[in-house]
Amino acid sequence: MEKRELIIVGAGAAGLTSGIYGVRSGLETLVIEEKMAGGTTADAPLIENYPGFRSINGQKLAQEMVKHCKDVGVEIKELEEVIGLE
Image (cartoon, rainbow, N blue to C red; front, side):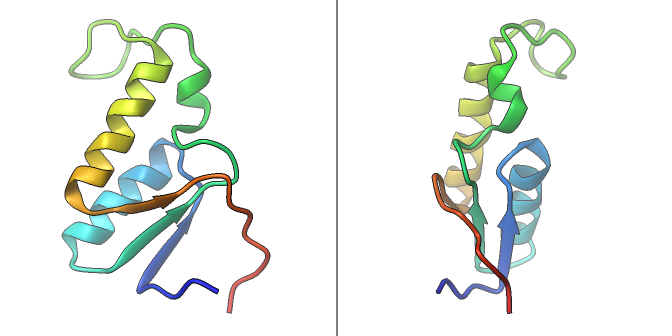
């Protein structure tokens, strides 16, 4: 069983962003994802409405999000299933 100050279930854009804010708040943060981090963003062939990128492949954007999280200290576990919370 994992114990952290903050555990976020789901590593889509919202979960990854929450992870960044958790670390910025000084919390030991873990993001758990049942599949691969990036959520539905990674499935998009082309994204043309994300600030900072005129046009970017969804998989590439998801990789950039994950890199950002790891760079600031967010721990991400992929291919993990959450059974319950205490």
